[in-house]
Image (cartoon, rainbow, N blue to C red):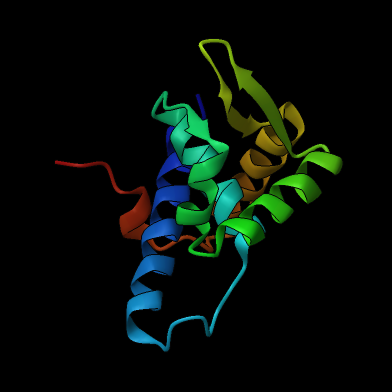
Length: 125
């Protein structure tokens, strides 16, 4: 499980991107690979399994775009694909150890440089 500050930053980033999407024209901003990585990072921390078919929703892109990015990120060693042992039609995806390590380092550097809004890291009352 990612350290708490990293998880809080990932969740904040996802919420900020969703808010941005509600305020600007649909389709104006797109970074499907980043959205997929953030979603997988947060899902893993919550102990949730992610089906490859869910990536389109996470990235807010068409299914074909999400699948294309999943292939690219698989070829780069960032995500791993696994067949569902109970249903051969389903494929699950998760972060590779490399992606998990790089994301944790990225979030750690953001914190160290003071680049994270203070309320994101504040402990709940």
